[in-house]
Image (cartoon, rainbow, N blue to C red; front, side, top):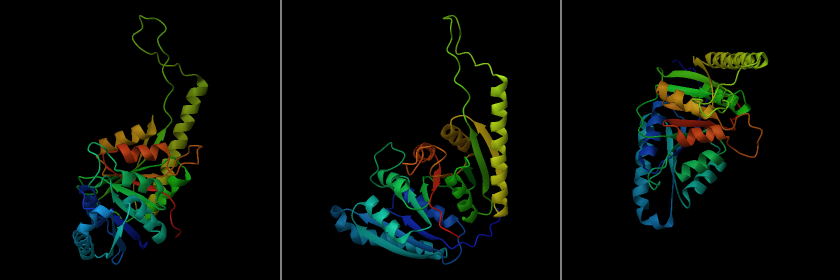
Length: 295
């Protein structure tokens, strides 16, 4: 995949030396950003960890030097305080173009898929957040989910700016509303729910949904193509989060990209239910896009 992206990024990378944070660093190294791209390698620590400050500084410097060898302009930031609070405060002050953070930190509860710090950062950060999962084996497949909402359009344009590995494959997916719930059996002898018969109006409505969905996908593909990102379109029907995650598994995608909020009428949430489910339950890394900077 060719990439003519010249956008200058300012990146904030969380690094607590967990396996997921190391995966985030590895993923960042694989993105062909322009030489001199700014990266701040950030870590916050609690008061009871003060005796380990020297070790933490050394670890941050190791990551910083590793990124410098890849051509990044990297610096470190170590702060005392709540990791999520300090990370978000720093992001509010610096307003990075992109945050990368591991899905779970060193102290995450066994069995959970997303740690508390990552949850808060992706929910409240003022910019796009890439939640990275270990193990990370490269970025060969990327699935963009779109529903035509304003944040979905932001995700498309952010993806257009984001430099990708040359051989990465890109898909664009839209999910149509699920079919009606089957009618419960009337007779105890029935073997299961009966499918609802489709009226002519329902058939026409579904055909219109499919036409509109395909038009949305075709338009998105054209936008990405104009930005040097050729993509393939996928149209599905069903529960959006379920279908997106199922398709990501089938395609063996390494990264999901979505807007922070879809077409839901509720505007009080920074994130919609679909994007939240993708972050929490996807097996791969997830980029949630919001508040795209001008340019």
